[in-house]
Amino acid sequence: MSSSLKYNYRVQLLLELAKDFIPPLLIASLLLSFLPSLLSDGFFLQSLWRLLICIVYWTVNVKYTDWKNGNEAKKMGGVYLPRLKGKWPGNLDIALSLAKLSEEGYVLESFERLFASPGGGDDVTTFNLGTLWRDTYVTRDHRVMQAVLATEFDNFWKGPEFRMRTRRSFGDGIGGADGAEAKAHRAMTRPFLARERVQDFTIFERYTDKLQAIDIQDIFSRFTMDAAGEFFFGSTTFNTLDLPLPPPNKLSKLGPKGSEAGGSYGSFVHAFDKLLEIMLIRSLRGSLKLWGLMEFWKDETKPYGLVVDEFFYPLIEEALKKKGKREMKNCDPDEGNLVDHLVDMTDDPQLIRDESFTMLAAARDTTTTLLTYAIYLLCLHPDVTATLRKEVLTYVPNGSPTFDDIRKMKYLRAVLNETLRLFPSVPLNVRTSKSSTLFPPDRTTKGTPIYAPRNTVILYAPLLMQRRKDLWGPDADEFDPRRWIDKERVKKITDDPFMFLPFNAGPRICLGQVGTVASTTLPCSG
Image (cartoon, rainbow, N blue to C red; front, top):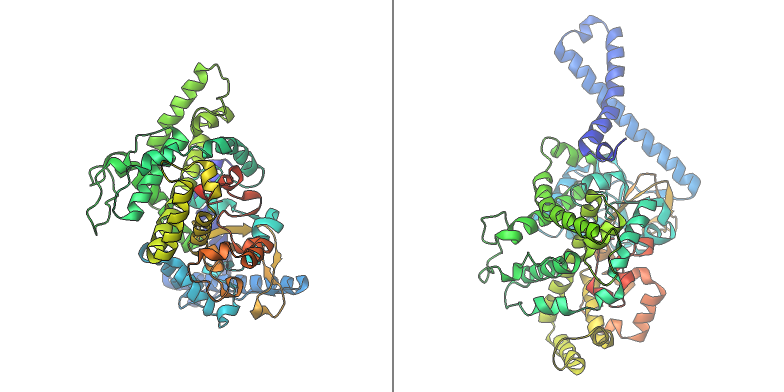
């Protein structure tokens, strides 16, 4: 099957619905042929029989699957987690409320409440959400994250459903790829993130000079977009920091052309943000049968994907022309932008576009989050701000910092690490199991490993894990950079590094982390 059909959510949704409906409807047709006419004549009676047989078929199928998984769990020496019990069938009420909260509030607050709902409170570190009767494990257990990201890495992948959700955004790029394909993509992009490039702070200085006293999240969103646009694409066309800023206490109007923030910021950035938002909502709705049905007649990502393509494809065409002019020779390592280097690896414009989108998303949103929360926490803790200011002025009394200056600022690194602990740039991530496996137990399973069937969705939440009091102490919710300087506490983190996952981990650790010691400048989504 071609890639366009394999990852077309409408095609795959119809195939899944066919698996659900064709067998029971065939059984119903066979049964109706044997029933007396008194019980089967008329459209209403026949429809009622078909509906009844479908419900019985689905119920038996779910019960059989649960029985089979329970038996396999016993054979493997594990315990099969029961699904949460929502008010609606298939926990539709929970799935829809999670998606709604992503637009109106903080979705991980709902997850935190759900951890208490099975009755275990702090003892529960993994539960089964079970949207539409599909096993979906939500975890704040760092040992489970270690298994998914490292020790059992080969048994977990992003999977085809992830690629369907993110098709218009990440496409066939590194963001959705698995296995050998993912390794090839990492090989394509890693050379561009060489340490020499990341040590160049002149781009950040150029856009730092434009910062003003205003809505800090809006400012940092613009700052990181401008800086990432130039760093990755050599493009200074965004100029979002030169556009009118919103008045105090007013939100920035990010919208299509003609809005308050017009031009590139109003079109590309708005479309870029909407694609990422839709990806999140699809993930929280869970099953393809839910979000796919809700978007069957209208793909919510299509108009925004077209706007994003209008930005990327001219850059790609220009890079391909430059490649032809240098007679197909590779771009010098210290010259050119990301697209110039990608065209040395492939002539496929779609793949270059997908890789470029992924790299921009990884650099821009995560860095915006880190800077925003760092300023927020420094405002709440003036004592930390004073200590940090003293350190900065010690190493950089005037001018801009160098790469070596940043490395020497231990307290600055502690502040950034503590910010990433409380507010990780990627607070929630997802993988899917390829085969049945066992996870470490939590206190509710009394030492018995947790069994996860094949094709289980694993939602892991670093934000909730990095605030666990049993891991980080009674002050886990407090902002205290000293925990990254205190030798005893640092040793605990060093001995159990999966307590802290700001850059993902394992073979898919953030490329920005691999490329530089000062890795806090380039968080990513993994």
